[in-house]
Amino acid sequence: MDPIPRIYSKAELGTGNTSLSTWVTTSRALTITSRVKLPSAPHSEQLSWKQSLSYTNAQTFVDGGNTQTVVQQTTGQNSDRNGVLFSYSYPLTVNTTYAVVDNDGSFKITGAVDRGYQWTAGDWRFSPNNVIGTVNTHQVGDAFYIANLTSHKSSSSGSTTQRLEFDSDGSATGVASYLRQVSASGGHIVSDQEILNGVPLDYKWLDSEERVLLLEENQGTDDEFAVASLEDILGRKRVH
Image (tube, rainbow, N blue to C red):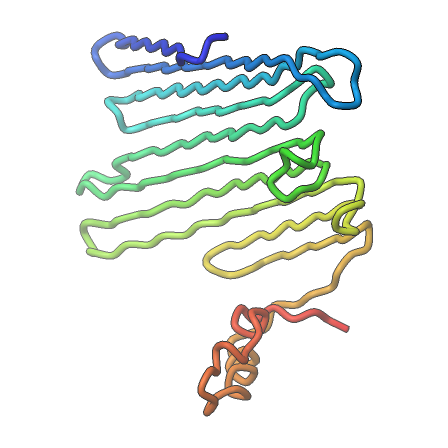
């Protein structure tokens, strides 16, 4: 048994003091063992539960710190004598860049993020939603900001896409597979895909006028936002 986390760190300074790299790693392994005697069993038996956790974080700073990158990973696993009960991971990557784009000092900042969450449950007792299955969600996004110091004007924009996948035996919820992927750009939904048990679900996003009309139907009530459905508020309606 090794319940005490092991932590390792390291840093390297680049040539000319213009770059820096750092690494941090930590891990822990835990095993709990007990001898159990069941009333129906003639003899006692030894049972064990194991957990392993790990975390890594690597960061780089180049061009005097104007470009920064972070790569991080967190993983864990619980298991017993029958195999893996539950495993999970949280990957994350972030990039940012600052650059002067004109002699007047005008600048541009760009950023990108790539992150996710995955878990697999081999035993419903250790599952977050009491089902045996796998969940995988992944999001990517990027954005920029430009400042013109001569005209004193600025502009910005960004986009993001997130995908969620769920697979199980369907015994607990009746859902064997589910997929949802949504993309947005400049503050607007540009695509929305949803598939339940292999069957696509058809939705449309309402424009601002349609959304106002839906909400006006519930105005004058004491609980107009409680009466309005979440789909009405968000402007997302299923196409029948």
